[in-house]
Image 1 (tube, rainbow, N blue to C red):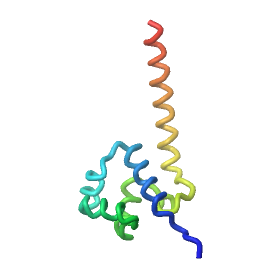
Image 2 (cartoon, rainbow, N blue to C red):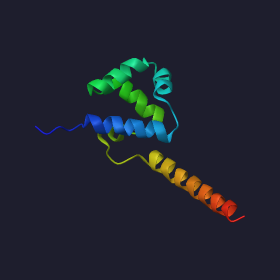
Image 3 (tube, helix red, strand yellow):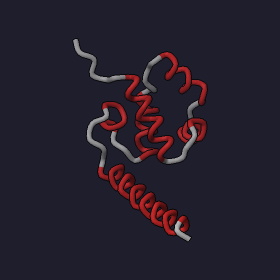
Length: 102
């Protein structure tokens, strides 16, 4: 039987969400009410968080469970967030190039 959930991909998606939102794992764990060490142990053992933790993480980052667990098409909220980051990056790049020409 083919494995539907790739555990490594899940942890990579979580790491990407944490980094893109500038949130530390210990902050996420505190906010969702789970011990940080438990989450680290799950990552080390290559297991998923509990269903309750997955729902809380999904809600915390405003992404669907499908995206969080399976990596299926990001929600519109996540896409909107990425678009906003791109706009901010373009603004920073323009400002940087203006200052470098001075």
